[in-house]
Image (cartoon, rainbow, N blue to C red; front, side, top):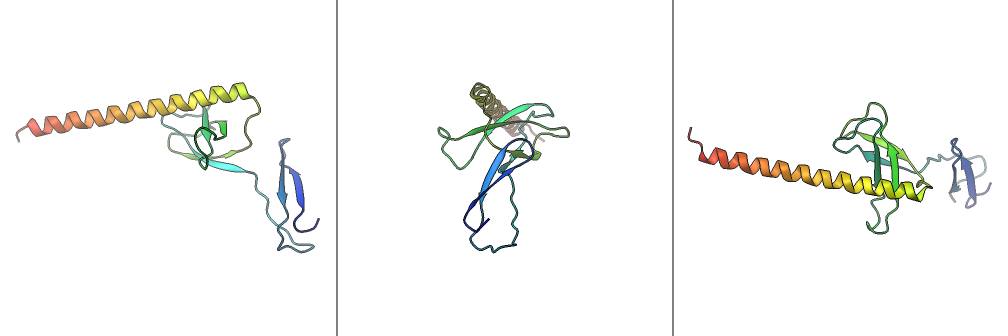
Amino acid sequence: TKPGTEVRFDRGDGIEISVMVPESLQDGDMFEVTPPAFMVKAPVGGVAGTQIAFRSCNELEETAEWFGLTLPEGCHPGKYMTAILPQPKNRDGLSALKAQAWEWKSQAMKEINEIKAGSLQLLWQLQRTTF
């Protein structure tokens, strides 16, 4: 294979990825190929076995590609894990994952608002208390 040509690999799970051989290489040189992946943070309330949806962050929300994964054993909220791509082939499943993502976002916003309201109430009570 010569520099600048495309090389295809089966990553071991039946999915094929392709890469271009870097122009800077010569015969006998080696280079590392890593599968496309994202680092994903487990959301609040996320536990092992929970299915979550996430999107690529370098695109507009309306055109972003959505992906999904099941949180692995030992996972807890705030923990990062590697999500190997590509996008799921089942578009109906993708719609369900998008709906789940919006549900997570709505729940997070509700929790944030509850925390803000509780903080304001506590502040109000402290202001009215004499020590």
